[in-house]
Length: 146
Image (cartoon, rainbow, N blue to C red):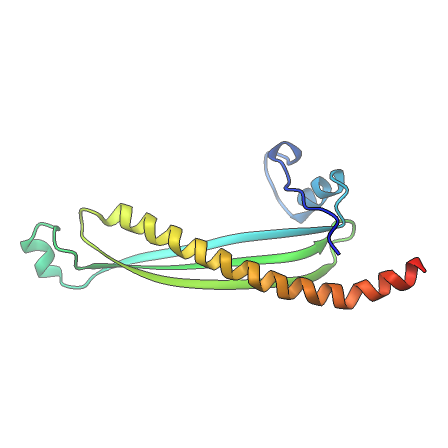
């Protein structure tokens, strides 16, 4: 039930987004019926498990833990009127052991891993949401075209 997929180019968007209306206008320029909007929300914090060891080893000991939580969320929205057809969400949590000297690269690696996993889970959830959209609206569309 998908005729085509087109990403929205940055040139079609205003400099600043304030609502879904700007995205829907850009989708309308591409003659899209439904718009998939997704976000990634990632938070992290580090915890020093053994502070005295960090002091003694001058931060070389890998006794800090980076906790990362990434949530990928998506909605399927009608380009013309903003009707919400479906939604999906997936969360991934990851921990990374690190030292004071390698904390920044460890945070970045853990963030990337968590975001990739959350996005992969989101694509599966979107597939389920899309099947429900097709179930609910494909029969109505077929009846209208007959």
